[in-house]
Length: 268
Image (tube, rainbow, N blue to C red; front, side):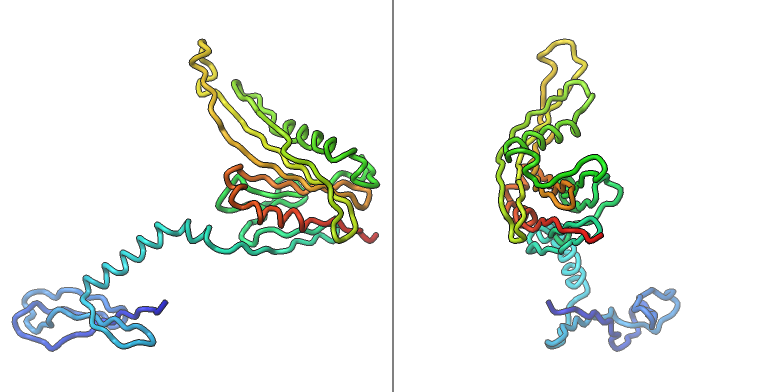
């Protein structure tokens, strides 16, 4: 896009119009008291397109163009943000022994309770984290220590429901295991993958006496994906959370993040 230079230029003076004084530093125009009779005519504005010719444009038209551009930019800022192609960055933790890719526009959140936590700055319910078991409380030899992928899926879902347990009146959760699978990655290690869906409902009037006045409404509907791997006698879990509607649009990117997760041997 060509840039625009706006330059104010005085025209020849006359003797019958109010005088306009101009600041030489910033191009501001101000009126001089009427008893001063040496005046300028209304200044014109020259609008220069770099790389093209000069064009004389009335001041009002220039201001209208600038205002229209600002309005269009603000109206389309969200569309522009989501229209950008997704790129990835690689995160490598040599101390704990794992690596993964994450969307380059996601931001790291510290103090979230996980070993690492990244969040989408636009969709606040979309994030990823990595949890690692304590070496002092468990000793894993393989991800198969969790049982079959189906058994691991039940454990993952149970853990999610425990974390999202609520003491609010009228809250109800619906959950289901969408899929469980296992794969051997290019590093030769076995990984389990688990996908679950959890919906949260809450009554709009939980203190109402009559049941018909306690109407349940959907609070949120989320897709949870976990990748489980074992190394260094520890269980590693990549956890991705995303709203169900967003998952439909970003599934290929989310799966690329899942496929990138690796656990690595730590040298002591």
